[in-house]
Length: 378
Image (cartoon, rainbow, N blue to C red; front, side, top):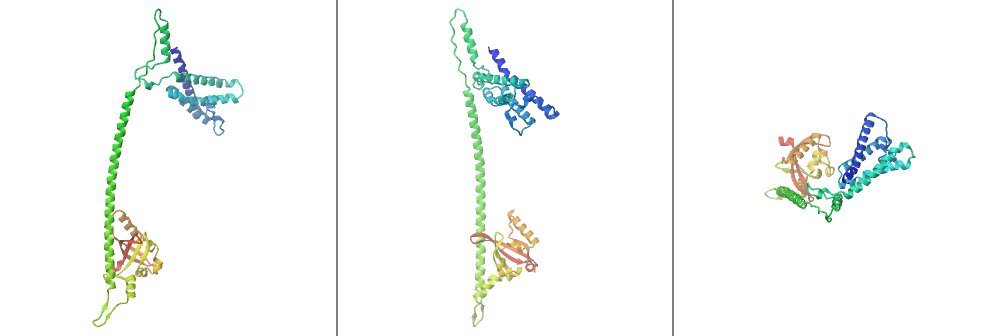
């Protein structure tokens, strides 16, 4: 009985191996050598031949894929694989069955009937094997799994022994691999703990780097605030000194009119005996400018405010300004650069710009002191 069952169980495997070899050879001949699209059975293993957009080559490829999947599941005939094999087998049965259903009865469809019966027999054999198959993962290596057929044969042999009482047989309990599973669980937990330690170390290093970066940023911010305060103090001292300028005679003290002084401070900032121009720039836009700067460019003061500073540079001047900004981004630390302005009359004026950080309307800005290169060189 056991040998008969083993022979029966080999039938699905042999059938699908034959189908896979035959379909593979036909696919090679049809695809590479352009042979005839026959037999018709190869294109009916899936019900997709009802779709009008698929040609015979597509149907042959789909049939070959379904046959190969079903062959693999029957060659690796575990309980789970046999359950999964119901899907490709049902596709094959539905494809062949629909062809038989909608086609007229003819001797040319004899292979369809034979294959349909074989596929039904395969389903019956797979179902019986699933019910009698024991999962080999729950049995120790080298031990034969207990089978219902062995129990029946042992009881029948015991019942035919003369002058002896029938021996009662009990099914031996399956020896589970709890120790193996426990060891695997311990190993996986150790690996998880190691990964967590590595991750913690990585996070700690990142936190240390972030703390260092925060400290550097805080130090830079403090230095910037100190420089800004020093610059503001110097500027206030300069304004106070200009406000206190008086022309005094021995007899009659004459004070300069405040309006004239303010105009001179606003339009003609004199530092160290040289004429300088001051511009406040925020994000590349001119926010405030002295009158002398507007006079140099030949524009009215209102025409300069809220305009891009780069718009008053020549092409050469723009390149010099870009080099300065790129140098600051790379950490060059320069606070001045030379450039060329273009006046309203299209005259080029080479200048040197000194940059000081400041705050304008509560936001970071740049305080530019513009000096003519010609005057500085002379």
